[in-house]
Image (tube, rainbow, N blue to C red; front, side, top):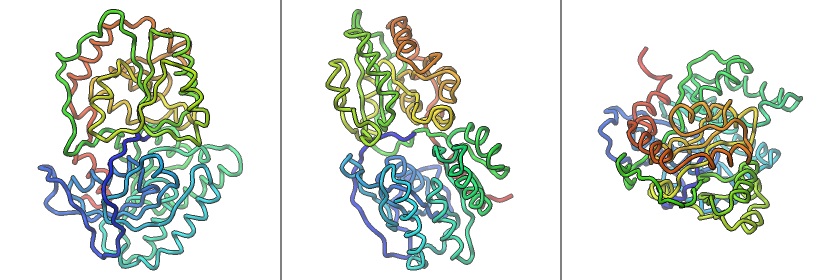
Length: 413
């Protein structure tokens, strides 16, 4: 899952034939600059922006070919700052329109042939973009290797019906043209790509860790993690892309039951197509508050300092994607010393139970209320200190990790 920061920078659509980047100096950047063509489904999506920033910070020459998700600007999404080929606009939860947009983008590729040529490797994020990237690659000579980056398994891909079978067959055809797979959680390979899609090619697990460029607030020292004042209520955060109706219901019911003993603070972009009752829920609970989008990464330190714990479990596609993923929330929270709460039996829950916070037995208000009622201020402060004592690399990506993921098809054997 992706967070909902909202940095802003000027937009520049490309008509050039060379990538235009402004990388930050990085002592780990390679001397030879790999030329990378990135296909992304939403140029305003914060995780896309961070990933392209990381590519450029790590010394890669990047051009992006992206779509834009309709309505994201209204939610505070930024304009892109890189050399960009605009491939069209898509809509939330409109599969038919997305398919038409993909077909339109593929039909438009020949006009960008010169701009798409000359790259060492192509990276496509999600299945829509893999289809477009594969079509682009087919036009190019020589054809660069294609890397498929998958951060989520769409619900259609695990549907047992005819639509799911057709979608998986389509993905398998594209995988046959793919040189390497990058996933954000090992469970995606273990539960989906290996058993259902028969993938046996190269895989890199590039977790949803933070990428912090210039302007990031440094981590607190472990000694700064002090217990909250006696009698103070527990502050539980929900940070990032706010789109899980089941999570909202659990947090609202927890706020109702515990009353003045708890405060739930929500930060990020609200996906109102998924949470149509968000405002009504907020109005019904005095101890439930929404603080809007935030700047990334500058806003993270204050958000996590003000929370005792954060709700880190995604429940949107329970039993499949939500059970398998590792969200960036656990890395952001851990880096700034805020313990997470997740659910046992999930990939997130297993990681959280291994020193990042607490995992409850089931996704319910009963379990969450029981946890919050039994945790005291000293336990929470001790967990904060333990997180802050862990090395940065547990929570932050390195240039070596990023380059290894995207350069694996062209690495010397």
